[in-house]
Image (cartoon, rainbow, N blue to C red; front, side, top):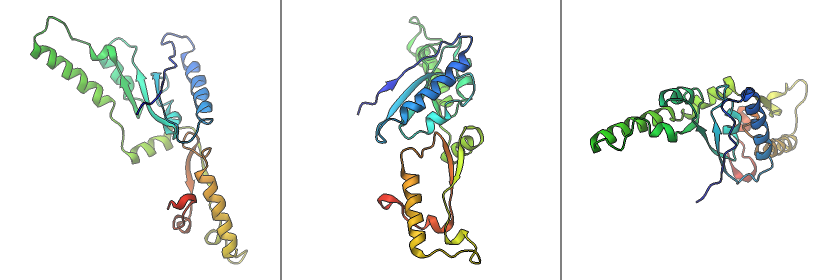
Length: 206
């Protein structure tokens, strides 16, 4: 199917480029929070001055992909910048054509094109899930939340909640963690007990 691409480009030579990028990030996240949870967008953005600035945008469930626009002087420079931004993939039109000439033989043209494609592919490779989690926890703005308070976290000498009380608390936890506002652009992680992980959340999800 078709996926809309939003391309709000920041001037590469703007004296306040970093401030513009932060403002853009805040506005994009505010817009995403007004979307339906099933909606999807691809963002095509100028590579940020601050590495991994767009991690909160990447983590939002409505974001399908973030694509980096290259506006540098060489493919090598663009690839170096891209590798500093995890999970952003390249959109390097100029870099793809670097070293290509109409006068080249088929073999020369193919070799040069293959070299460029491989360089762009390698710098666009996505980290694994666990590595991406570590990157987000180390670098992304956000917070952790403890949504688990029940029988196994309350000393018996102080208070022993009934099963009905625990069920009510679990239904509340379920509503929180499945709500569209509780998403990865702000929430880095939720702390839960082993007993909670044995329950199901709304919709029958484990």
